[in-house]
Length: 296
Image 1 (cartoon, rainbow, N blue to C red):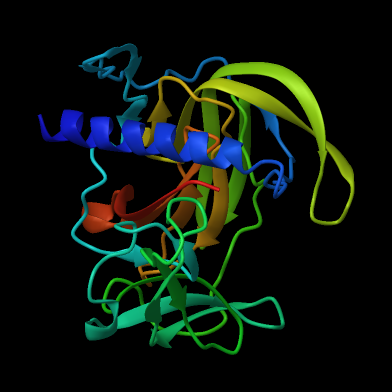
Image 2: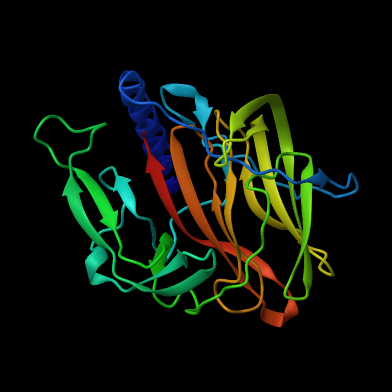
């Protein structure tokens, strides 16, 4: 029931904000997230983990169901915030009263984790507010570099020059990427339905090719382990492309961690932090925090 109520809330918010955004399209333009692609084909022998589709529909919206099969819930013990402007209710309350650490991209391109002191202030929400209203929230944080994200102190291990992995921004259905990190061999691969191709400009201004995604599942295979780790399972997407925004060791256990935008709708982002555990010698990777942002 809780998941159904959350689905109703998110769906209603997406519809409302999508309508508001479309009304403002003549006032502003949007750009697509740049995607870097370097991939190989998925081994046909790989077996896709079974998944249960949530078919709970919203009353009055019989054609809609929550497309997120995994993670099954986005209510986490830990918080995730980023700098920027947000609608009311998207940022956790009492930010200034909590202790935070942030992943920072330094000016030389290296990454570090250290304490940060984010601040918030109310602003006019240009999408939802009427004249004179201020329900939006602006999150700021001072740092010598770019603050990628922030989470509660104690979740990440503080340090500099973090080891990272350079992976394609998007692993499309039918593609995979092998990589070695701190002595372990990993394979990141995706399954689902890939639609029509399209071209767009990346951050360097180069014309690159992307694909529509209709159904998407992202998995991680650790060499020497039989169990495949499910990172994301979406039964449908609406003009959205999940992206891999950081890969490296964030909690100091020597295993791989991720920041993934697990979006399923073009009018939302849902950055999700995945951290590893290496108990009993077996590596597991689980979602621990997320930030959902709707609208323009």
